[in-house]
Image (cartoon, rainbow, N blue to C red; front, side):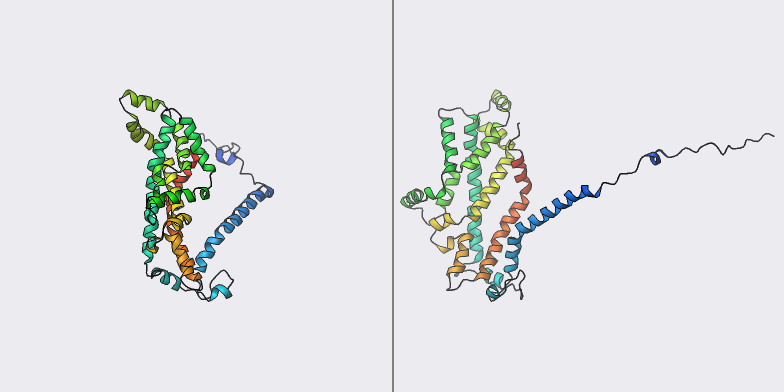
Length: 305
């Protein structure tokens, strides 16, 4: 019989993956810039968040520690400041101030979105005599400080008998007086292709149908961005309510903070900081929920349709 012997000299095929070169180690000096950037970002974040963290910590301090304890953390943390705030101010329940601020904020959002979007559509899609001059004049109002208009506006609302009401704070929102929001929406509408409007006109649509069915859905990022800014500005407004509101039961939260400092001869720092924290929470939640829409609105502002 003939036997076939295996040849031990024949090489065994290797796995192709074993022939690939291993990952090269990056030199240590290349990691140094990345580490420095991370440290700088963390330090900058800590600086930005420090006032916010201090406010939350100070809200747990009793009044006796505000003059003696200069540290960051309270020595004897307590929730008495929040209990005192929730009991009300000058016989007015705290929820009343929250309700007033909420009414002003929602009214500002509704008025700004409706009036500014209509004005923006008129400036960007309707050709009428003097449109460029009116648009330039509207942009010019951005250069006027608010303090220049205080006295004329107050005289007008006083003659109309609207002092100590919410109308002076909301009327301008429904009349497209916020030039910033009108300009923002004009930029969005101008970037939309005009072929959409022409196709709608061929189907028999007028300006109203085009505005509600085509333009508004396409400028949703601009509407949400304007809503966020309008709500936050109205929620934090102090000078406007101070001028036009006289009854404490109509005060929003920014004016409620003043009551804690004026109701006694000495300021109640603990209660003031506690209600400041409560007033800040809705704005933080509102911003966190709609943060993605705000970023999308700013990011897509300069894009072509």
